[in-house]
Length: 567
Image 1: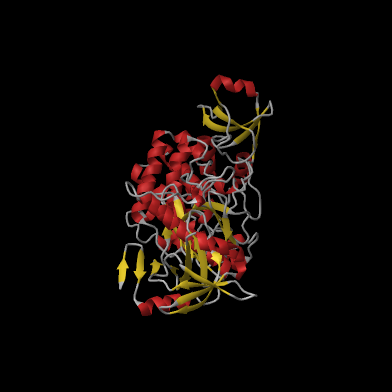
Image 2 (image 1 turned 90 degrees about the horizontal axis):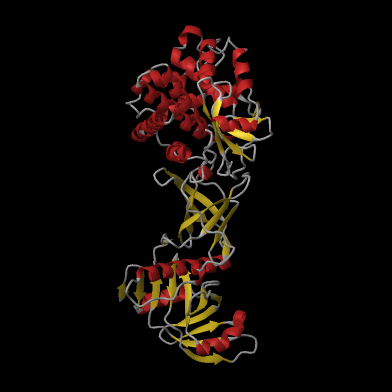
């Protein structure tokens, strides 16, 4: 007979009860657990389960608990095929007289409680049950922190920042996965990644891990943690009923970092950057979906392209600066957003209609994402030979193929911004080696915007350059780039464009945020460090207040912050 509840079943049938108890006789199969919050399972051996008569339990490894067993409530616990088993409180019959072992006879239990007998069960953490997780992958600069969402004896589900999940993929071995509980307890578990899914709505990634090569000691600890999570969840759900005492696992200890629950981009430098973070969260999530074999989601691309256009129409200068503040996003996402913003802004200046500008934004946002589908060794190579360059050019076709569902997207715009952005006037570009009149106006304009942003970022084979160095390069390569569009770009965005880091005569550094009609800074924000803007930015200076800084002496290439992202 079984009396089932939502989370437990009670096994009273003699044959099934005996079968469950016999599984606990295997080495490492059983533990003893004293009643009360915070008590951990203690090693024990179930030597014999004689049906209907008695249990023979060996506690030699923890002989000091013998007296407590006579005075306190204690259970025999264990797990079998992923199910957690627990007897009713043990009733001591007698101690067995052996000089070399400490053993006792206990009454045969009337039932065995089974918690979630399906092996895949995961104990869900409710709001307020914050367990921090640190995940370290091979070749990563450092671990990333996230939050534990559920836990089982076989694995767990994590929530990580979207950008931190960009380099993760299924079947990838984890170098270190550690669970950190609020009371200071922690456990490192060997694991393998099973799935990585982006969630742009909640601006995070969900990462499924399977535990591997778990020994008896780790399994016992995992069982304890799963039981305590279930117990704390039950306590929180018992409104108006008999209260359970809180689990000590979730009692915060001073100095123990809390699990991060801040949304993606919450600490970005400006309000506009934090608004744009919803767009980049979508792009990070879309990048994960592409790596998982999915197409570009047509409806989402349309929706977020409209958002970018709307923000540009609201405050173009704030958006231009925000585009350099997306420090936690994947580099392909940062580049795509920056190209989309500047290209759409330049297109508006040229009087192109809104529908065309929306298609331009959409195409630019994803134009480089095919690179994420290339082999890792090709993406990371500092120098490419002819054969590698040919393989690298395949990223264009890879993203075009995934845009097949985006039937609302203008084919002409997509061709110019996605397919032709890497072509050059002299035929030296890729993927088709188009040249001269075969490149339309939008393709020529897009190539300038793309190169300006790309050269302003670090690459495997060179460091980032300032705007003045980039402009000089373009103007000296008129055989590759349309000089008319180079000059229009410089006139429109200025020689010290928004998003540049400037050093002034008084030695201070400041980010250029707004320009006057002559293209000179009229608003800057001070920064103590020469790295991409985070939430440590200082005072904002406008108009006449800029005089205290003195002359703008030079533009500075900011360093990239070390974010500890997986490779």
